[in-house]
Amino acid sequence: MTSEAIGLAGFNALPAAAAEAALLACCSAPRWARAVAAARPYAGTEALLDAADAALAALDDADIDQALAGHPRIGDRPTSAASAREQSGVSGAEVKAALAAGNRAYEDKFGYLYLVCAAGRGGEELLAVLRARLDNDPSTERQVMRGELAKINRLRLARAVAGA
Image 1 (cartoon, rainbow, N blue to C red):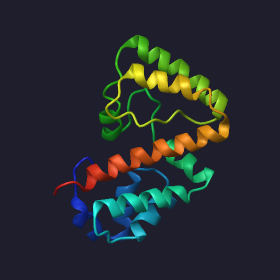
Image 2 (cartoon, rainbow, N blue to C red):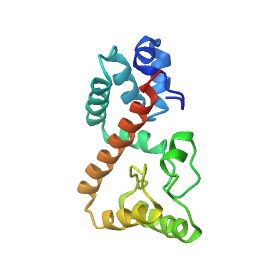
Image 3 (cartoon, one colour):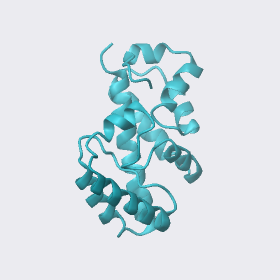
Image 4 (cartoon, rainbow, N blue to C red):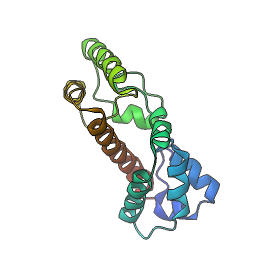
């Protein structure tokens, strides 16, 4: 969704295509966006967030790969206002270089980018989490990554429908 909060009523009132487009700004998996948009109207924010979680849980690996494609690497230049806000605690050339090396090691091991809900976390903490997750087996890590994606989706959705 855009960086402007549209409110839950505004989201519920959007035409289907506009709702899907707004959702794709939160998570770039088209099947997820279609499922969340199709379940409108939502009685409250928690119902929206629960539906988003359920839609995410139903995605297959190809859908999850589409979702991951919408996220920059931790420590890289963010590609959206949401990513920039979420990664605002990542700073310093040394931390960014260590994150870049960690990202490469993670991608070599798991075959997809390191995804973590970065909101409110500093670069050192994100680096420590990355290093710890490198010890996971592929199945465990896929579940951890899905959990992080759900956190990011919830954060972005809640922000988008707040107020207004």
